[in-house]
Length: 257
Image 1 (cartoon, one colour):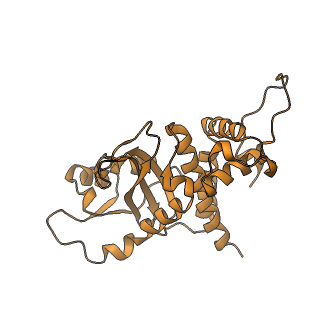
Image 2: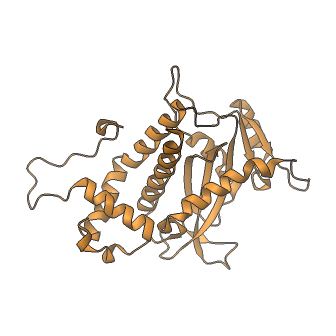
Protein backbone atom coordinates (compact mmCIF):
# COMPACT_ATOMS: atom_id res chain seq x y z
CA UNK A 1 0.00 0.00 0.00
CA UNK A 2 1.55 3.31 -1.09
CA UNK A 3 0.91 6.63 0.67
CA UNK A 4 -0.17 8.08 -2.66
CA UNK A 5 -3.11 5.67 -2.74
CA UNK A 6 -4.70 7.30 0.30
CA UNK A 7 -3.70 10.97 0.12
CA UNK A 8 -4.09 13.05 3.26
CA UNK A 9 -5.33 16.62 2.92
CA UNK A 10 -2.24 18.88 2.73
CA UNK A 11 -1.55 21.55 5.30
CA UNK A 12 -1.03 25.18 4.18
CA UNK A 13 2.65 25.85 3.59
CA UNK A 14 2.70 29.03 5.65
CA UNK A 15 0.08 28.26 8.29
CA UNK A 16 0.53 30.45 11.39
CA UNK A 17 1.06 28.97 14.83
CA UNK A 18 2.89 25.84 15.99
CA UNK A 19 3.61 22.92 13.68
CA UNK A 20 0.59 20.57 13.39
CA UNK A 21 0.70 17.21 15.17
CA UNK A 22 1.84 14.45 12.81
CA UNK A 23 -1.04 12.72 10.99
CA UNK A 24 0.23 9.29 12.06
CA UNK A 25 0.14 10.26 15.73
CA UNK A 26 -3.36 11.70 15.37
CA UNK A 27 -4.50 8.50 13.68
CA UNK A 28 -3.17 6.52 16.63
CA UNK A 29 -5.20 8.75 18.94
CA UNK A 30 -8.32 8.23 16.81
CA UNK A 31 -7.77 4.46 16.88
CA UNK A 32 -7.34 4.59 20.66
CA UNK A 33 -10.75 6.27 21.00
CA UNK A 34 -12.33 3.87 18.48
CA UNK A 35 -11.10 0.80 20.36
CA UNK A 36 -11.51 1.97 23.96
CA UNK A 37 -14.45 4.42 23.75
CA UNK A 38 -12.82 7.05 25.94
CA UNK A 39 -14.01 10.64 25.92
CA UNK A 40 -11.99 12.92 23.67
CA UNK A 41 -11.23 15.08 26.69
CA UNK A 42 -9.78 12.06 28.51
CA UNK A 43 -7.39 10.98 25.75
CA UNK A 44 -4.10 10.60 27.70
CA UNK A 45 -1.60 13.27 26.64
CA UNK A 46 1.28 11.09 27.86
CA UNK A 47 0.63 8.73 24.94
CA UNK A 48 1.93 11.43 22.61
CA UNK A 49 -1.07 11.45 20.23
CA UNK A 50 -1.86 15.11 20.74
CA UNK A 51 -4.89 16.43 22.58
CA UNK A 52 -8.33 14.92 22.20
CA UNK A 53 -9.51 18.14 20.56
CA UNK A 54 -6.72 17.90 17.99
CA UNK A 55 -7.57 14.27 17.16
CA UNK A 56 -11.27 15.12 17.02
CA UNK A 57 -10.68 17.90 14.51
CA UNK A 58 -8.35 15.69 12.47
CA UNK A 59 -11.00 12.95 12.34
CA UNK A 60 -13.50 15.34 10.77
CA UNK A 61 -10.91 16.80 8.39
CA UNK A 62 -9.77 13.44 7.09
CA UNK A 63 -13.32 12.14 6.75
CA UNK A 64 -14.26 15.23 4.74
CA UNK A 65 -11.31 14.49 2.43
CA UNK A 66 -12.56 10.89 2.02
CA UNK A 67 -9.41 9.34 3.48
CA UNK A 68 -11.08 6.49 5.37
CA UNK A 69 -13.48 5.67 2.54
CA UNK A 70 -10.58 5.53 0.04
CA UNK A 71 -8.64 3.29 2.40
CA UNK A 72 -11.61 0.92 2.69
CA UNK A 73 -12.00 0.77 -1.09
CA UNK A 74 -8.28 0.15 -1.56
CA UNK A 75 -8.35 -2.78 0.84
CA UNK A 76 -11.42 -4.23 -0.89
CA UNK A 77 -9.48 -4.11 -4.16
CA UNK A 78 -6.56 -5.91 -2.51
CA UNK A 79 -8.94 -8.63 -1.32
CA UNK A 80 -10.54 -8.90 -4.75
CA UNK A 81 -7.10 -9.34 -6.31
CA UNK A 82 -6.39 -12.13 -3.81
CA UNK A 83 -9.73 -13.87 -4.63
CA UNK A 84 -10.82 -13.28 -1.02
CA UNK A 85 -14.24 -11.80 -1.83
CA UNK A 86 -17.32 -13.96 -2.41
CA UNK A 87 -19.43 -12.29 -5.11
CA UNK A 88 -21.85 -15.21 -5.43
CA UNK A 89 -24.00 -13.57 -2.76
CA UNK A 90 -24.26 -10.51 -0.56
CA UNK A 91 -26.10 -10.30 2.75
CA UNK A 92 -28.00 -7.37 4.26
CA UNK A 93 -29.10 -6.78 7.85
CA UNK A 94 -29.46 -4.03 10.43
CA UNK A 95 -28.52 -3.52 14.06
CA UNK A 96 -29.63 -0.80 16.48
CA UNK A 97 -27.41 1.02 18.96
CA UNK A 98 -28.13 3.65 21.60
CA UNK A 99 -27.32 7.28 20.86
CA UNK A 100 -26.43 8.85 24.19
CA UNK A 101 -26.27 12.46 22.98
CA UNK A 102 -28.93 12.33 20.26
CA UNK A 103 -27.96 14.32 17.15
CA UNK A 104 -28.33 13.65 13.44
CA UNK A 105 -29.86 10.33 12.29
CA UNK A 106 -31.26 9.40 15.71
CA UNK A 107 -34.77 8.50 16.77
CA UNK A 108 -36.85 6.43 19.22
CA UNK A 109 -35.84 2.77 19.16
CA UNK A 110 -38.80 0.38 18.78
CA UNK A 111 -36.85 -2.38 20.53
CA UNK A 112 -35.40 -0.34 23.41
CA UNK A 113 -38.46 1.23 25.08
CA UNK A 114 -38.35 4.24 22.80
CA UNK A 115 -34.90 5.37 23.88
CA UNK A 116 -32.95 7.45 21.40
CA UNK A 117 -30.85 5.37 19.07
CA UNK A 118 -29.39 4.89 15.61
CA UNK A 119 -29.36 1.93 13.28
CA UNK A 120 -26.51 0.49 11.25
CA UNK A 121 -27.59 -0.99 7.91
CA UNK A 122 -24.91 -3.31 6.51
CA UNK A 123 -24.22 -5.12 3.25
CA UNK A 124 -21.36 -7.62 3.13
CA UNK A 125 -20.09 -10.30 0.77
CA UNK A 126 -20.60 -14.02 1.24
CA UNK A 127 -17.62 -14.17 3.61
CA UNK A 128 -18.80 -11.26 5.74
CA UNK A 129 -16.46 -8.57 4.40
CA UNK A 130 -18.26 -5.23 4.80
CA UNK A 131 -19.02 -3.35 1.60
CA UNK A 132 -21.12 -0.49 2.97
CA UNK A 133 -22.69 0.68 6.23
CA UNK A 134 -25.46 3.28 6.33
CA UNK A 135 -26.43 5.00 9.58
CA UNK A 136 -30.05 6.05 10.08
CA UNK A 137 -32.41 6.79 12.95
CA UNK A 138 -33.40 3.72 14.97
CA UNK A 139 -37.03 3.90 13.81
CA UNK A 140 -36.21 3.64 10.08
CA UNK A 141 -37.57 0.46 8.51
CA UNK A 142 -34.91 -1.95 7.24
CA UNK A 143 -36.57 -2.45 3.87
CA UNK A 144 -36.21 1.23 2.97
CA UNK A 145 -32.41 0.87 2.85
CA UNK A 146 -32.20 -2.21 0.62
CA UNK A 147 -31.51 -0.47 -2.67
CA UNK A 148 -29.36 2.21 -1.00
CA UNK A 149 -27.09 -0.54 0.33
CA UNK A 150 -26.88 -2.24 -3.06
CA UNK A 151 -26.07 1.09 -4.72
CA UNK A 152 -23.55 1.78 -1.97
CA UNK A 153 -21.33 -1.16 -2.92
CA UNK A 154 -18.25 0.59 -4.36
CA UNK A 155 -16.65 -0.36 -7.68
CA UNK A 156 -14.01 -2.88 -6.58
CA UNK A 157 -10.92 -3.01 -8.78
CA UNK A 158 -7.97 -5.37 -8.36
CA UNK A 159 -8.37 -7.53 -11.45
CA UNK A 160 -8.19 -6.92 -15.23
CA UNK A 161 -11.36 -5.53 -16.70
CA UNK A 162 -14.06 -3.33 -15.27
CA UNK A 163 -14.33 -3.00 -11.47
CA UNK A 164 -17.00 -5.20 -9.97
CA UNK A 165 -19.79 -3.96 -7.72
CA UNK A 166 -22.73 -6.31 -8.31
CA UNK A 167 -23.16 -9.59 -6.37
CA UNK A 168 -24.96 -12.48 -8.03
CA UNK A 169 -27.62 -12.71 -5.29
CA UNK A 170 -28.84 -10.71 -2.30
CA UNK A 171 -29.85 -12.52 0.90
CA UNK A 172 -32.18 -10.95 3.45
CA UNK A 173 -34.65 -11.86 6.17
CA UNK A 174 -38.36 -11.02 6.25
CA UNK A 175 -37.60 -7.43 7.19
CA UNK A 176 -36.55 -6.91 3.57
CA UNK A 177 -39.68 -8.43 2.03
CA UNK A 178 -40.75 -6.08 -0.76
CA UNK A 179 -41.93 -6.95 -4.27
CA UNK A 180 -40.86 -3.56 -5.73
CA UNK A 181 -37.36 -4.14 -4.34
CA UNK A 182 -37.30 -7.63 -5.81
CA UNK A 183 -38.14 -6.20 -9.23
CA UNK A 184 -35.41 -3.58 -8.91
CA UNK A 185 -32.86 -6.21 -7.89
CA UNK A 186 -33.75 -8.41 -10.85
CA UNK A 187 -33.46 -5.38 -13.13
CA UNK A 188 -29.90 -5.03 -11.82
CA UNK A 189 -29.34 -8.74 -12.57
CA UNK A 190 -29.21 -9.61 -8.85
CA UNK A 191 -31.20 -12.61 -7.65
CA UNK A 192 -33.28 -11.68 -4.54
CA UNK A 193 -33.22 -14.47 -1.93
CA UNK A 194 -35.51 -12.89 0.68
CA UNK A 195 -37.99 -14.68 2.91
CA UNK A 196 -41.62 -13.59 2.64
CA UNK A 197 -43.72 -12.47 5.60
CA UNK A 198 -46.35 -14.99 6.62
CA UNK A 199 -44.45 -17.86 4.97
CA UNK A 200 -41.74 -20.22 6.28
CA UNK A 201 -38.18 -19.01 6.02
CA UNK A 202 -36.28 -20.10 2.92
CA UNK A 203 -34.59 -23.39 3.79
CA UNK A 204 -30.90 -23.02 4.54
CA UNK A 205 -31.00 -19.21 4.37
CA UNK A 206 -29.91 -18.79 7.99
CA UNK A 207 -26.74 -20.84 7.40
CA UNK A 208 -25.75 -18.49 4.60
CA UNK A 209 -26.74 -15.26 6.37
CA UNK A 210 -24.91 -15.85 9.65
CA UNK A 211 -21.88 -14.01 8.24
CA UNK A 212 -23.65 -10.64 8.39
CA UNK A 213 -24.35 -11.12 12.11
CA UNK A 214 -20.70 -12.07 12.56
CA UNK A 215 -19.68 -8.86 10.81
CA UNK A 216 -21.91 -6.80 13.11
CA UNK A 217 -20.19 -8.46 16.05
CA UNK A 218 -16.80 -7.41 14.63
CA UNK A 219 -18.04 -3.89 13.89
CA UNK A 220 -19.48 -3.35 17.37
CA UNK A 221 -16.41 -4.89 18.98
CA UNK A 222 -15.01 -1.41 18.38
CA UNK A 223 -16.45 0.06 21.56
CA UNK A 224 -17.00 3.51 20.07
CA UNK A 225 -19.52 1.96 17.66
CA UNK A 226 -21.37 -0.19 20.21
CA UNK A 227 -22.84 3.02 21.66
CA UNK A 228 -23.02 6.23 19.66
CA UNK A 229 -21.58 9.32 21.38
CA UNK A 230 -21.08 11.65 18.39
CA UNK A 231 -23.86 14.15 17.79
CA UNK A 232 -22.47 14.82 14.32
CA UNK A 233 -23.30 12.08 11.83
CA UNK A 234 -20.18 12.72 9.77
CA UNK A 235 -17.90 11.96 12.73
CA UNK A 236 -19.80 8.77 13.56
CA UNK A 237 -19.63 7.69 9.92
CA UNK A 238 -15.89 8.43 9.95
CA UNK A 239 -15.47 5.88 12.74
CA UNK A 240 -17.67 3.41 10.83
CA UNK A 241 -15.56 3.76 7.66
CA UNK A 242 -12.34 3.35 9.60
CA UNK A 243 -13.66 0.25 11.36
CA UNK A 244 -14.75 -1.26 8.03
CA UNK A 245 -11.27 -0.71 6.66
CA UNK A 246 -9.70 -2.35 9.72
CA UNK A 247 -11.94 -5.41 9.33
CA UNK A 248 -10.86 -5.68 5.67
CA UNK A 249 -7.20 -5.31 6.67
CA UNK A 250 -7.43 -8.14 9.20
CA UNK A 251 -9.09 -10.42 6.66
CA UNK A 252 -6.50 -9.52 4.04
CA UNK A 253 -3.64 -10.45 6.37
CA UNK A 254 -5.16 -13.91 6.81
CA UNK A 255 -5.13 -14.51 3.05
CA UNK A 256 -1.44 -13.67 2.73
CA UNK A 257 1.33 -16.12 3.69
